[in-house]
Image (tube, rainbow, N blue to C red; front, side):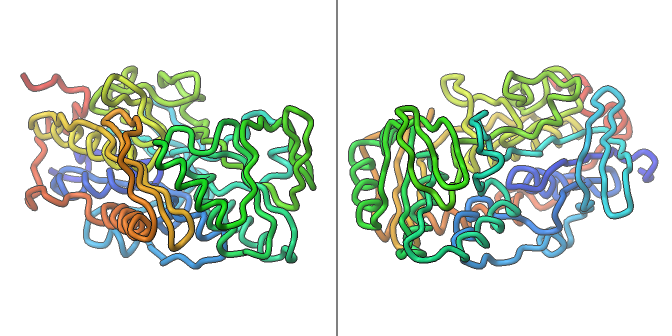
Length: 402
């Protein structure tokens, strides 16, 4: 098959889900039949689950894509995605040479998510975020300039907020660190898990403001619904994620939050040549519950999409890998952790793992996630499958095998 008839796969975004999907596709399909282009704004892989460490002043291991993807056949295009035309099957990008357009036969949309200001006044102007590397580096610089005794307030009691507040408090015990959460500390964890959180945060000297709905952020304080003003030289905003807005601006069918509606193979229900993975997808797991935005969801959805695309292009059997949860892994500084075991649909059970062993467990999970990006075909046959010219031309819209 010559290059003119090669099936063109473009993957937008190289977080955990996008990078894993690109690498798996390139290793599963014959290079003569398919080109896989990975478009990402940065040349390095960002370990998003470690950005709280970066913000707290720790240095992370560099992971250049040129090295991670060497020998796979994936072509890296360092550029910012500015638009998707799902009807014309094109993507517009901007790189150091200016604006351009890329045509695709199959698109994997993995642009992920960023921080969510929740419409609260003053957040965009005064708060810091750690949803991406630029934000984490900005916070890192600000924290480094704080004098002893100054106040840092982390808003948001979810996993990101818990990891950020404990990392900052452990790294800078000279600061006055507080956590503000809309619910109770440890909501969603088992009683034993919640008790461990209270123990660790208390030991680090973190002040916790529970059931506090933030109504505004200013340069020196955070205001909550009851009128209380919490002093804050630095406010870190970790109240959840918002997906990239590009899908919403396209003709793809999306939810009210902007996530692309997909079927069980991560294929868009409105455009069969588009797949969405990770935070960008409105996918469901056990009990038809929406998957939460997380690395734990991103990896399985990436594998599901890549295997479905490969199956449709080669006439193979469609994957039916159940996407389920096993635990929630939380680092609480470098020496403490909490592993909350959960049901398949992400409900906490009684069992937890705590302490130093939990911290080691979480570190292995982080390392394993990065390893999975570089080795996305673990357990699969090494031989690449061939794509027929007819299927390369028809792409994912081809009729399903019986």
